[in-house]
Length: 423
Ligand code: AMP
Ligand code: GLY
Image (cartoon, rainbow, N blue to C red; front, side, top):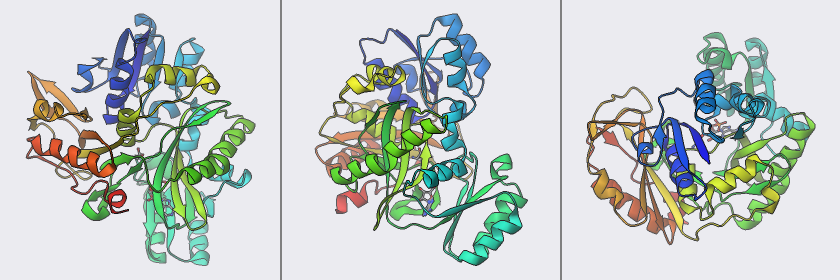
């Protein structure tokens, strides 16, 4: 079959790499792709938000199945367009994608279906928001309701910071329309984990859990990023806790979403806080996490294309996923300056040598090829991913590969996986 993957990050390279291994995959395209994706798929220069161009490409080339990586095109309704045209798609439609597109909507669902999460309130008016903050005190969390490229969450240690967050989001419109409404939440404490389940509208099938490191620097210090590294399994999510997450969070969500006229299909990514009271939902994403997806795809033994297709076609009840026992760990290499301002255009050397290490894959995020040279073209640039018998062994191998990569303009954290290794 002919498959098109939408996106250009490490997540999409990992998805393309896994899908390309399937005997069912005859032709694989990726829009817009990157230099790493070029090695397993045909990159087509179409932007992820150009839904018309994507639809034209799909119909002109007889694409059978589209796998959507990032949330933007899901929230914009790409899956709705594809399904209306009779083309199979992996991912939720626009109504179901709103669980990522509106944090308030997810919180209301949690309240109605008794899904454990932080106490909250929604506001579209700054004075009322500040009044609530005054009444509740700090610490407190202020969030823009809509999509804000992962920057719309402000953790406030005191009330003045929370007032400033309201001004920033609502009065100064730092995130545009996404901040017309805010969600204010109680601050939860605990260890975080990323929990993934495939959902076909009826059946929810848990995948393995992962953990990522959002902070830019060692020791989980510095500004938040899209993720500087990840590993799977997540030791904090024991089998007992995973069963509780399915019973208390994922399954009630799937039933609630269907009851609200937003039946969910695709991968549901629950950001969890493992608190003293048990697992609590931080938020939903309607896509795979990145870099978590890179570690997941390395551990997946089942045919990725068959699995995603079974999800799209509502056949998950007949599916049993096979995973490797090995752990996987991803170290993200980013351009110096990320998540702030950074330069593009530097050359990366040593990738061939590093990629030849056993059980290592170097997934590309922001790269392009110029005359045989690999050039940095984004903030997060590479996801150096390795397998190992334990997380510690995977960590050692991933950093061996990192050491072979010659890219003076880049940096990475040197402690990815520390929490799991210390356990
Ligand atoms: P989100 O974009 O909602 O996942 O939030 C980004 C990060 O902010 C999360 O990964 C948490 O570290 C933190 N966070 C969000 N909401 C809360 C909360 N209610 N309590 C504590 N930390 C939170
Ligand atoms: N790694 C966090 C995310 O994909 O949102």
